[in-house]
Length: 432
Image (cartoon, rainbow, N blue to C red; front, top):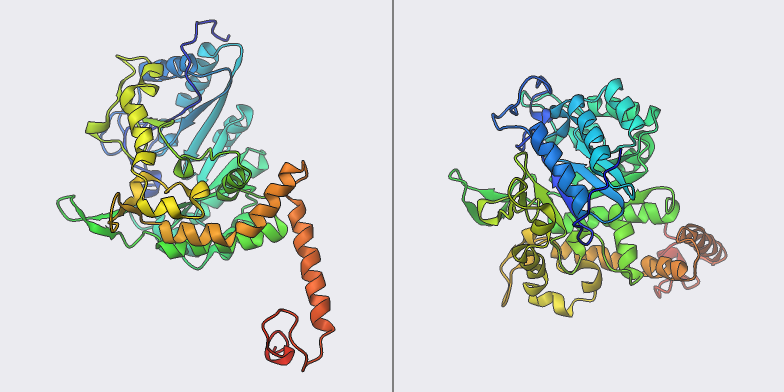
């Protein structure tokens, strides 16, 4: 039965919850038991039933009408066991208002999923984010158990269970050094072998630390993707997607870019002008401004002491979000893709600039990618404004390629190449 409690709602926000209380994942130890203890395998307390109840009560009270995202990620949520999520569904039904809908999301490495989990996700309409980095040759480089065993085959078994039950799922791809130069291979594997329709490609950027845990200048770990490598990866995926998959496969980075080109703002915090509307909560109910800034000095407060709506709108949280714009790297002000990039995530701004705030580590890649997609994005944005489907670009590109092929076929070997290079056809496109 939905709650009739008086709401204390705020503007839309998202709260990402780590119920296990740690960064532990099953990929480090496939033998971990999800039901054996009130603590995670690394000894940290897991979320109690009391905290779960307080979280859902506060979440629905603070959220506006319509869908309310209930998001469990971090620390491998399935370690909490299926009964924990059954309770979450029951409590959401108890605390939501009649004008609200609980929209559950869980992000998982998928190693503990079985038929019972898949049936539950299908019955309760969960959106499941699955960490999969591409084919086994890529995925298993960095996603292994603590004993060194590969995990790709097990993840694919779980994906098959989700597909069989028509569970909506996203491919959560970490683009690391292992992925560089393999954008096309990774994308086509996800599309064809995993039958993924929704994908997101997040860059791995990890600051290097010494044995004492101190940052080592601007160095990053070997696992981190290079800025240029990330830009090339996205561009290579885009070139395939725009020629055949628009409207059939959905890539977060491309969908978000299209909203920017369409003058509709940017809903993804990474590329929004300001941030601060995607908060994080740990297993004890402590709330932080962002999942990347879970630090003692950043603690906003606890649900045991303060209403969630107050924490979301707290002055220090507003200042945190505004700081992204206030500390914009100087070079961004003159950049032609500022409207789409907005300086990237503050966590990645650590390269010293000639003057002013630090620059984003991924700047080179972002610039190359946004410049690469400029023309087709303009076309798709124009189609959207004309109330036509952006997917029409697929047939438009095919027609252009056919016309180009016909021009080339009609060109004599010693005639100027129709591509405009100024060279003879036999020395240009006819050389092969």
